Structures are given as structure tokens and as C-alpha cells.
Image 1 (cartoon, each protein chain N blue to C red):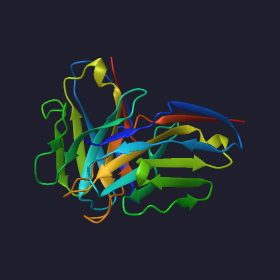
Image 2: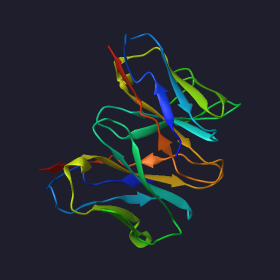
Image 3: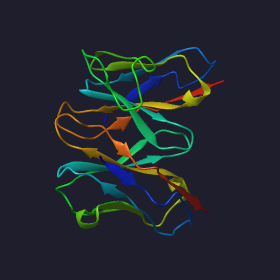
Image 4: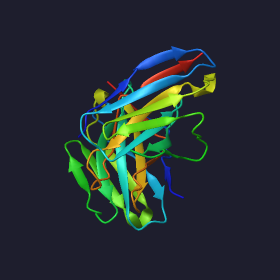
Amino acid sequence: SAVISQKPSRDICQRGTSLTIQCQVDSQVTMMFWYRQQPGQSLTLIATANQGSEATYESGFVIDKFPISRPNLTFSTLTVSNMSPEDSSIYLCSVSPKLGSSYEQYFGPGTRLTVT
Amino acid sequence: AQKVTQAQTEISVVEKEDVTLDCVYETRDTTYYLFWYKQPPSGELVFLIRRNSFDEQNEISGRYSWNFQKSTSSFNFTITASQVVDSAVYFCALSESGGSNYKLTFGKGTLLTVNP
């Protein structure tokens, strides 16, 4: 399995501000994903972070609100822009650890975001 | 569209009891992957198992076992002789194949509480 780290692990932010979350993997991976888990809820995919091209967003999520970068095969960032209390969630990145040959997915420890 | 249903929102058992967590899925694909994840109170998502649609063999790993039945579109998870450390939210998830589509659709999760 891949070792995934996320920064920050938690943060409390004021509404109207933005937060950038980093995801670092210890090996090169083709696919990286960003999920959101609202309090007491299941996980919902925000977008697929594509290396060298724009992220692919799921229905209900837009680039202006959740810009994503993927500069290489081991790193990605998710920014939560112009935050409101409804953005309070755990944000998790996940990776598929083998290049194009496996559907295993492993998750980072998550970033707990509280917006006041 | 794919869908995962975990009808049991919460289950409470006494230590050493066996417990089965249900998962029913919907997909139009003939090739797909099913997963179970454990999310303890710490919040980290722990990968438990991946099963592809062509492999209907049941699997056992220690106290954990999984029953995959394509005829009923179910992928149930049984914990034998449950322990307090098994207390967590358990998520079933589905990934459809097709190109490079690795994204996961999660069920709403089942909160398992094992009491001493």
C-alpha cells in the first residue's frame, strides 16, 4: 500500500477565506482523488486530480470553488475557496497505488475543516 | 448510475457476538469492483477488501469474512466473535470499470458498536 500524508490535519477557518490542503504520496501514482465527508455522512467524490491536465469534477463541484493542482505523480493540492460553514467537513485524498493495473484505493488521514 | 445501499444505519452488539453488515449495489457494468472500508473514531479510512465482479468466491481473513452474491447484488461483511476494537463505521463502496474510471461510490455507512 502507499503511504499518504495530508497537511494540515485540521484547521478552523473564518468564512470568506480559503484553505489549501496538501496531499503527498510516498510513491508515484496515476490516479489521485479528492473526497469530502460532511459530518455524520458518507464520502462524496469531489474530483479526480489529473497530472498535467485540469482536474475532472463531479456533478455539484466546480473548479472556482475547489481548485486542484497536480504538478507531479506524488503530490496534489485542493483549495476550498470562499469558505462558508457548509464547507465544514473532512477532506480526504486517495490514491490508486499501482500504475494502471489495480483498483485498490487507499486514503490519507484526512483534513478536518471547521468554518466559523 | 451506480449506487450502494447499506440499509443498516447502526448496529449494537455485545463482545463475542457475530455480526453481519449488509451491502447491496446497483450497476449497469459487467465489470466492477466492490470494497469495504473501516473508519474508526480517529477518522482514518482503512482498506479491508477489494473484490472484482468475476470472482464470486467468498473470502475469509481472520475474524472477517465476505459473502459476494451477484444474483442478489450483495456483498455482505461478517465479523465473527466481535471485539470492542471493531467499533467503527464501515463503508461499502463500488467502482465501475471502463477506461481509467477508478472513482468510488460509497454507501452511507453502518455504525457498529461493540459493547464489552
